[in-house]
Length: 176
Ligand SMILES: [Zn+2]
Ligand SMILES: [Zn+2]
Image (cartoon, rainbow, N blue to C red; front, side, top):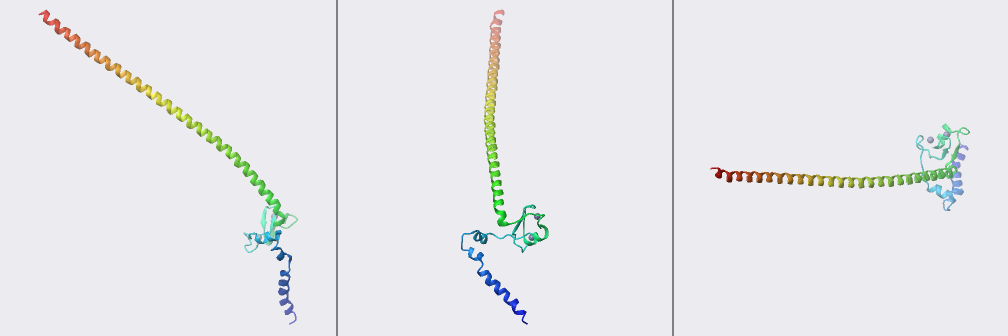
């Protein structure tokens, strides 16, 4: 009977302990504990009720306590808390952002080159079209000139024939 009471008392005493824990007080301060409270909680994909709280540097994986116990035991795995790993992760993120910026600049240069090339092609196309128009105009002019020449020659021939036939008409009565 006496053993039942201490087990009832235990949760009460732990609750009392939590109320006076420095973590609780940290919530009102601007310390890292305050950020910790506001941080979005992420849960393990495998152990879906377990919060992710460790990072294995060797496997590059975030872990819950069950993952840690199952597969990522030290010394074979270099495991750190998320707080410990944060500066390294931030630096890695900064490096990635730097690389992305460099890539973006490269792409901007490439884009400018493509735009220049497109403008050149557009200019070349306009010049080529203008040249074709000039060639077509020249051909039309030449054909018109050739037609005028042909018409002129045709009328000259008609005129010549008419003159010849009249000469014949004039001569004929003289013969009679
Ligand atoms: Zn897990
Ligand atoms: Zn690991």
